[in-house]
Image (cartoon, rainbow, N blue to C red):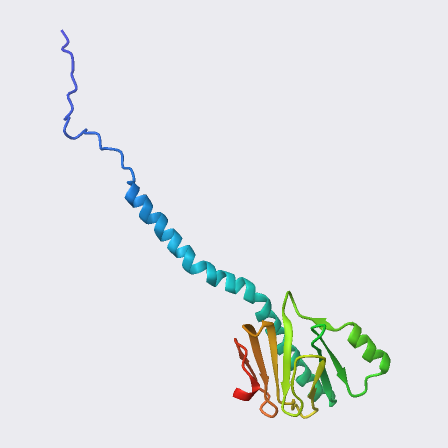
Length: 182
């Protein structure tokens, strides 16, 4: 005769664990922390996104200046970087340029990205020019006129590019730096 087998488990080891849930206080603290992180990072993100055009324009202008200095030495010519503050455009001319090439250079002048403007160009012999035009000369010996170029949306959001005549260095500042303070 067979005896029935009964499986008796240990009820204490098979207890059901209560379902884990988040309390309202925990959810409130997490939401507060997320909000705090966003409040601290969004202004920086906005500054970086809006500042990208200005940084790109500054890098582009520095590359243009370096290239012109190298071309002046290589070709043994005087090159001139022209700025038109009214249209926020710039172009290059050289010693032996013809009238046709000069007109073509002006028509195909480069412009700055987005809402970036040529705020002004400061030179020792002409002072600060924020209207009309300005010209920076590059000599066959690799010299450039001392000049300060300000690019930006306004003086509050600007970059300063300083061209040193003999050393050939280009310094940049992430703010508007007046020529009188240098």
